[in-house]
Image 1 (cartoon, rainbow, N blue to C red):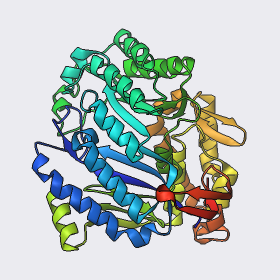
Image 2: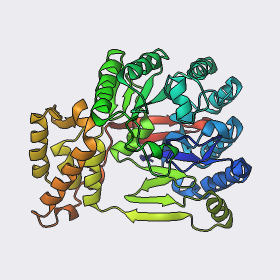
Image 3: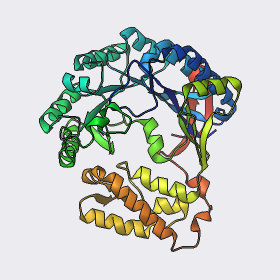
Image 4: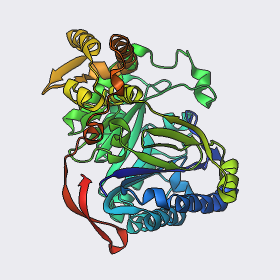
Length: 424
């Protein structure tokens, strides 16, 4: 057994819907929680044969608000995963929580159940801004939650904060950075506010109360600089961590590794196939219980599409892309892409170091546009050569993550052990 997989569990329940949230989540639907919990556990059991071929090294409970779901139910789902899959004892097991929305007792329960990483939705250190976002907590609640998490035994904590909020300026953002770093979390995610249709904040679209593009760019670059000074190295467009505390689960998405999701709207990538489940909790529960198909969308990825995802996803990270690596995996050249990257380098948006191309902070700031241009260049390159993507020589051996392979003894939950060659 030499394959690793990450598991995502979607917990769509919330106490209330945040003004900016565009994820599939439900407020006021708690009556469905017991049936949903049973359905997810049943669904995991149905995947036991597929899970048997993998070592599970990351698990992520996202939402929604998993902490609203209750520690006991979260633990029951994780226990089902341990029962039906090979969960490594040292796997990264993350759960998203809201400040003030979980007790110290529940944090202790989660830690004892095997959860070892928390992602805390702080979002802002300004109570007025928190209220405008529809958040029910205060920054004081966030401080208390971090302290309780430490007391419960969590030594891997991530916090989320948002820039570009209505009426936010550089001074208030600087205060947020200062107070956030004072929490001494191991990981910080900084997201730019996106005004999505269908959210409560959509009324602010094109509003003068929102920071303009230049102001948001200044906030982003300020965050990169200040967080580096506090020991948080940027490793992805929006993510910063102390050494060794990068999100292993999220790295799977950016490196093109395999992952399996459970729950309505959850996505998976397994064996070059992407699929997602129906985004309707009642239909999900009913179909799982009836043994019916819950897949809403599936797509078999071609080698050329996988090559495009290599470019798109890895350019989001500081590890970036390599011409040799790209050719070794996909048997494709990237001359047109390299020509474009050299232009980016001249503009200060990209740099070439140790055989790899990556974006600078200024490049990350423009990454959506730049990556789109890179993908266009890849498509133009494709038209110059007659179907080289059909070549598969050495392809399986080439599909490795950044981590070397070596023989290890893998220790699982329940005292089980596996010895063999695994990706570490």
